[in-house]
Length: 289
Length: 294
Image (cartoon, rainbow over all chains, first blue to last red; front, side, top):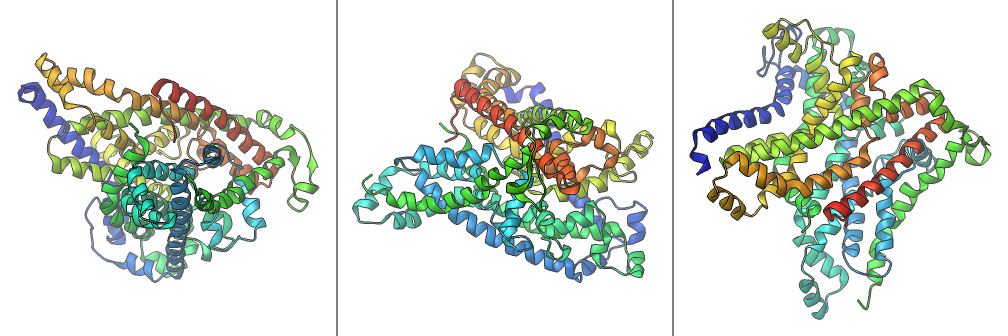
């Protein structure tokens, strides 16, 4: 047996070590950030913080949560995520269910949808359209333009196709309507697919930053990711609305770290629970027999 | 089916959204052939034929952005295919279910972080007094390296950080393929005296080949997509020469400098070539791996 040879044992030891290392590498930067956010200014600027807080304090979090821009942008993000995910899932499950059936014009319709994945108007025409529709500076500019995603539609169609036809036929004979079949048979049975697509859309909305910067003329209307982009990447501490003395007393680095961490927390918390779904969802959506 | 009208009704919302928000902007592509002025609109602006497209090749910055895009995108595609394959094979060799699951959970995580977050991490870690430079200085005595401000290093930073973010997620389909291999192949190979390495080479890899072909051919369509989110958040004027890509160039030249027509032309140029590449790659995937999108 191969796994009893010395060579394979040596390989195994190295492989375990390497894989654990790979896992840690994906996670340690966040831990470093968490440690920085909980450390004192002196420790952070002296580069003394690695993966454990030095001079523990929660000032950065107090400051973050007392910042009105941060709170309002967090609210905008929550609102857009809830609205956006509901609207997208409604559109996509309806169309996905229909397109998993055979009917006249089905292929033409499918290609009409898929073409949007292959070709687009691009940045400026989209910007002009959204502005022209009067959506600028409203939450709808963040929710409506991306509501339909062809990739997600494909995942759902492929998922719905895996549900046995016989179930539906039996329900038909019992007199169930299309809509009853969709809500009572298809939705419960395709939970992994629906959970996967919902997760993608939710994460997409939560993480989306460019549309906020594009369509919101005022930083106070930014979603969280756009707000973070200005603070963390552009280093625009003005948006933090801090007084000079506060800036001197606190480490900019700690505040940035705290904000990144807080904004990432919902994802870190939700995703382990959805993991088994999305792995299954992707595999079923992508790999076909 | 006798009554298929409900199916049409179900497609209506999606149809409406696609018409407005996906096909709607395509009308705006006419701007690419105009000297577009926002206050005149598409109907009032002057038509200038292909001038905007010619400018793409007259402006050094634009040509450089196309070259940068190709280099960055191709490197990302190659590394982004090889690393997940290797990692998936190595991971599938772990026998301890607990460790395997934990490693999987950790390596999927970065995919779900936004590029803003990752850029924040990178700026923090890769800075002159950041973690990586600390380690390099203390262990090897190397003077600090400015990863995000050095034009020669910027592309490597982009490719490596992209792999860091995406390899775990890219592994998923390969892991599923490996899990689906019939165990009797391995048993047969073992009886014939194949070592574990030979089994990987002659059983695992060939079984993964169709999936590898599909993913590789389909990624051909991304050859002009170097990742706007990532580059926009990581780059700065110091590294425009090697790091400016088509999408960031469009943003700067059009929305920041008001050259709407020109920006649209660059975008259309990119979309046009991408469309051709995607159609070709889809055909190839169908021909060689019998892959269908739906």
